[in-house]
Length: 124
Image (cartoon, rainbow, N blue to C red; front, side, top):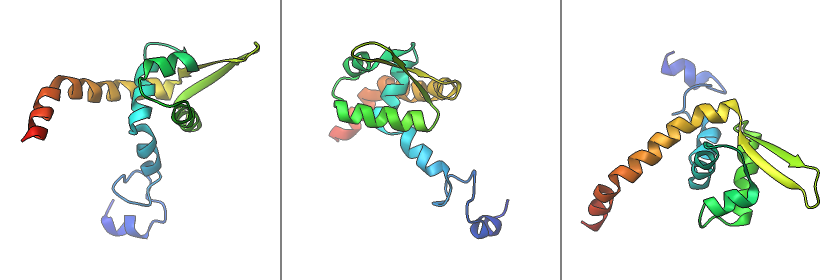
């Protein structure tokens, strides 16, 4: 597709470099620090809210709640509420979320493996 066609299209779907592309919002959601960590934590299986909060050191309850709501709205997570008192809420990956996590795991693995080089570059 030519650049001219994209510029005349009010919603250039699939062109992540266009500010009008709806993928920009999704990119923003899934690449936030907390979203990456939530999705990676759920890659091993469903977790309750409290277990997620313990697993992701440093995340506030408010930020975790916001991140979970956003990822659920985008279709990456499921939310199940058990009819108990108090309610037990469990989060898991949808098929879409499970398809995304290997890509994020690659990013996390790269950062962990190359961290000494990154820290050396920072100190120069």
